[in-house]
Image (cartoon, one colour):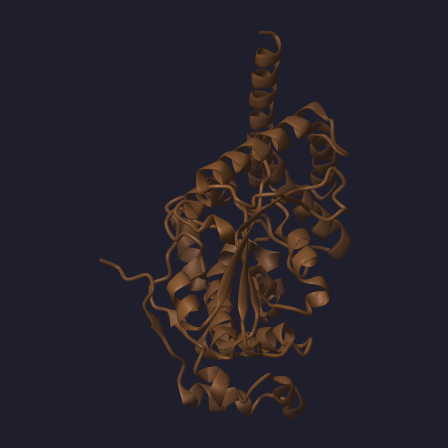
Length: 353
């Protein structure tokens, strides 16, 4: 039986070798001594890889893992930026967990809950990928799978930073696209409780058609605006679908008093809107989640919001043609279009009854 949670540390020799290469001014910017941060630098021995990942890509993901020295350097860069706003530890720390499928709009929800990153330490694996020294090299070779190829180390970096923040009592904000196999990735209720944390769950209720096309829209926008650098990645549709199904499964059994539910505004420039869930049972909240998801898809299909599926789809298609996108990306987009046709047919069937 494989233990996917087993981790190992990084040697002091590796740290000393790295320190000889670092600028002293950079070391001073770290939130703690390099020796203290090293205690939290742990890597999974057997990282979990979804069965939906092809054997070839899975092999490449393992081969793209950083050396211990490279990994530690990336961690130093990421933890420096994470604590750059001068947040202070709290006597009554809170863990705010943002839960939704990929593409649902966790970033806008984060900005609503944590304006200017002043309240919480943000834990998000996607934010750390760009700090790898080989990030642009990987992106240049395979932009489509950049997220997967850098995913193993970035999730470990997120766990390291979360554990450091938790050990020191910082308010933390964790963005989670859950997994059917791993649940709320990076969230351990028992561990949080042991460290005196209050757990709040903030859930985005967004239809799967809306979020599926959003991962492409976000990707194309990032390529056009940022030339594909920074946090740019295209999420695999299987991963999106799994996270969509996992949201409700992960919420079952949770204390309903901990849960806040949000919907996306018709205008994406407007922050998400909170739905009243006070006094509701968990079953009622899950029903509300499903209703709002369905309403989100309906509005997107019929075009009653600021945008419609067809207008977004055509914009994405035009941008993909301009850059001669890989066939694999077209295939994923076509799969999403097929879902639109299915939803449209369902709506028409209901309206004709």
